[in-house]
Length: 164
Image (cartoon, rainbow, N blue to C red; front, side, top):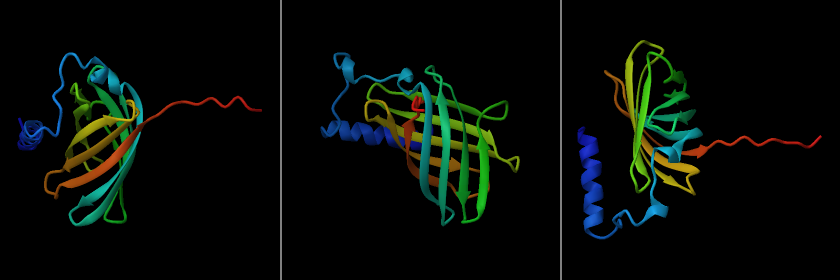
């Protein structure tokens, strides 16, 4: 288990111990979440900082309801560097977990346009009747400072306009 996951787990255990996070029991069925809670397409926007410069990312993730995901994103950093990223296909992978309390982790790995390996770990919580994710993510690219962003993802829905 990575150091960051251990830190998050210990932090949540500490909060539960002081009573700030109520325990989740099998009796709380209406409050239980699972992999299917994310099934479908989500649009997201995040902002933060990497190597002392502002970073923004916008994109789309699609979750299969069984722990796998695909997606694309546009990353803008250092004011003028734009990268189009894809986690679909043989050079990318995306998986996720959802805990009963609606928190979870998305693990992404892909090869960037410069043929460098990149990993992104996203920590999230599901809110707004399973229609929104609030998240923080850390992007690791060997040889570069980590990029940390915070953002929101919204469930995408298709609306048909029947007006003439």
